[in-house]
Image (cartoon, rainbow over all chains, first blue to last red; front, side, top):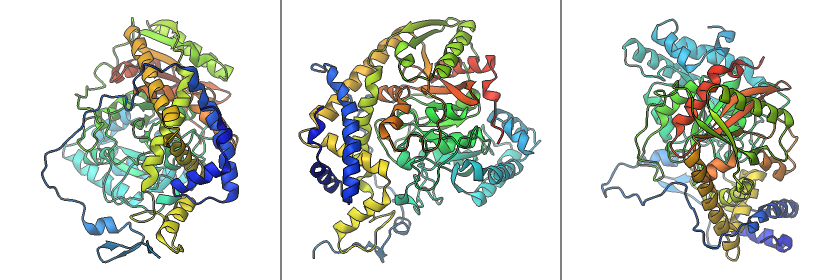
Length: 99
Length: 487
């Protein structure tokens, strides 16, 4: 985990595409340097033996919460659409998905 | 009410003035709006000032007070951090992504305060999406420390802490994921409380790291903090992590003193990197607590230094998932010149997010990706278990733990902006409480070269009463909370 030599510019580009963030070459290089430094610092966790330890997702013990299956009023469509960048009548408009 | 009077006002005092009709909520609200107008060009703590709704809220509060139907916060002017949704009032997260977002609903806490007739003055600046420790990551403005406007207020709740410090409001609510309430409270000389995870509903708090985020008050005094927590704590069916346990009246035991209290002082919070001036003030504060009857013992929490690494895996991982929703389709910033949908989403996220947000999204995506998940995310969750256990063991023997909130006082604007790792180290003393989910408070404990220093205390889960009891005793014995900036 401390071997961050494999954090190449290619790896950053791959992460950028997974996260759907466009990045310039300059941004990729800067990100690689900064992330490598952060990962080096994170590597201290290897010093701790966690072989027989269970993971903690939340600090409180969570139980699945279900409500009764009763319909309730939703927010009015107009309220939701008021924040949409593009819409047509009751539908949100997006750019073409298929060319 | 003149500007200097506002500097000495607390919620407790304002309540008396309102209830005895020495002042109306409208007069109080107008005085704060004037104060904001006079100081905001120096402090920059507000993203939005909601003047019209504030005046309207104040008039309604006066009707409630006149008819004897008020409660503790009726007519009290406040600010909310701008990651708490407010129906009809712009909520930006200090991000270009949400610059024009007007929520169609209120956060649980916003609704609670509204129902009590509290008066919302506006929305407080933060590091974009609450990621940062100086409020310099805001897409709109850098908030300044009221004690020295060439310095940062801390972050991410820098707007809330600076506005309370500069007496622009009686209190504000912040959110604390790794120290974002306590660290700015320390740097601005005010009281900041991070309650137990689940104590306050996160419904309507724009999510950063869902297993760590918690909302809490920033106030002038410890008693004010307890008064606000009384009014925002409690179960909410809309937050599945909200705790369904009774809320005590946090004022009941606040003045019971700390005779016989066992206070542990973990030595790991006094090691490398701490400013000697800060250390001296904290050591002096421990003597004050001892004189008040507490038993002080040095203890060891060996896993302390690993909490930062755990945090910088868990928080970005959760953030990378939470921030997937910003695609420029349903709401928020939208890059309009794209040829197709994917380009639209990718450019929206390129131009809508700032550098720190992108860094964390990529880091989190890396930690969660196949081949790295076990080594990073799962490892961090396992160490989280050990850190939690270490605190649980300590609270078997001690009522409260005491330590500095921040290793230094407020630093200069731009001083740490080019080195993310240096910036992250600001939260080294606050992060452990978030990892363990336990309550923690920062209170004014001294001044070092004209800048405030905060004393931090932590207690076991749901033991906020012990924090209030200890903090209140300290506050009664000292005058540090009375020192206000000249601004």
